[in-house]
Image 1: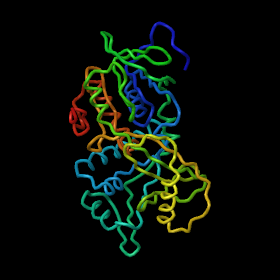
Image 2: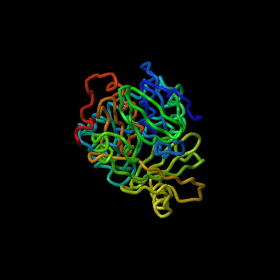
Image 3: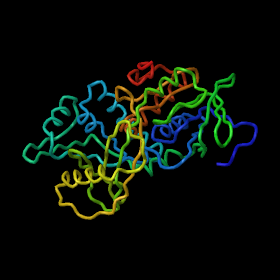
Image 4: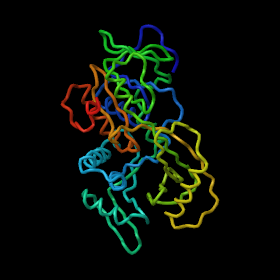
Length: 340
């Protein structure tokens, strides 16, 4: 996008960050008739370096989540069919499988949390039809349709009588509402103390995946240390979780260990594959659930989904959109006030 000329463009809502949370919020606001712009410098973000899992059953079992947290993930999943139809995101796949390792324990957790599943003790396999996925490249493109995308880096923000004024490398922008979907990035200059405190709660986590052109599976297969999932015409192998790491350079040793775990989960002998290894950095909060909602007048956050950004996107988008309209908080477990 070219540099703006005076007067400064104005929007109902301005979102900083074009990952899953930022674009889901943008799409939801646009569905409600709001004029929305998204500021992002471009390049591959953490939401692009992802398998696109919409997987409450598996994620809740793997992380041994509470029934309250599981309820949040389940409600997020339930929003996806209508959200995908409205935005053009391709949502597919219902079968997910876990093989080996602590499969009996995972099955017990799914049962306790009320997720549909089938456990075959003889083959040490656990399956569920409650999970799905998206392909991040297709989803990111679909969510950006109809949204003003500003290819720039946000440099600072200040509140004045007209709302928020944001300085970017493409010029200044104004909006009634400012939404921070900045991942694990540091706080912008000029933000109020409560916003800076919220951003300071976010811990970076590096995740590494490998893209394979070959179709290795027709549904998600997980096991100890790795998963293999369909991705477009090929497959994705994932994923590491490395708290505190920010490097975007793939770690060869960790990638090789993940590949070995993937072959074991598939029950196949290793063979040569051409793999495009990638690394992305996402953010998490102290309790593993995201922060979503108003944090100061006209200022909102959509931060810290851990590895469930795609799953939680429509729910967080709805929570943020509700906050811009002054509606009651629908998901108090996600409100940033719990950390401030």
